[in-house]
Image 1 (cartoon, rainbow, N blue to C red):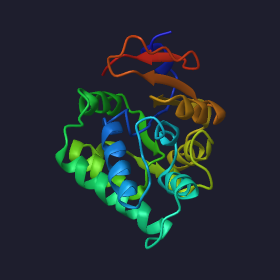
Image 2 (image 1 turned 135 degrees about the vertical axis):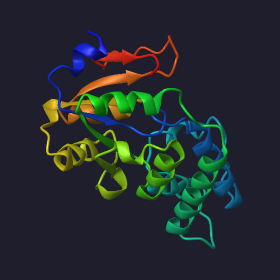
Image 3 (image 1 turned 120 degrees about the horizontal axis):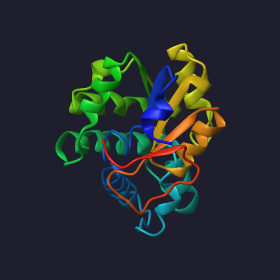
Length: 212
């Protein structure tokens, strides 16, 4: 079934952030490697794959458990990563074609629009400002404010509640399996955004979006 068909009867569209409205995977990896390597952590492309779906506090705890460092608290390490990511978002090439136009189209059809991300709350305004789309979102939510991040459904349930919409009336746009699991566990339908990659096929998704 197409995206248009899935949207019929829905009242809200909830977006993940990283990889869905902005291409930040390389930015997070760069910041993670810079910050934790400086603390003595041996971060490689291979062993950092496990942190891809984690929240920033979870990433800090993960590396500290393997390579305990001295001189900086976990919270200080987290903040260094967040500050570095925010700075890189302002300067790096990380835009995804068509995002603003797509959001404006949803707005014109009177859908409520939410954001639900595992990223820290502090980074959300930076992203929305860079894309010039702050005004297009009714609510934004960070899993930082929840007890657990994705794949736990808490951040999606909180977003639906703030939008005053039932979960069954929400369509979620996600790019990761853990994010899709979170949305499904919240009782929502999911569109998988693949950003032009025709080889990605998330069977868990209800439909797919190749690009905007």
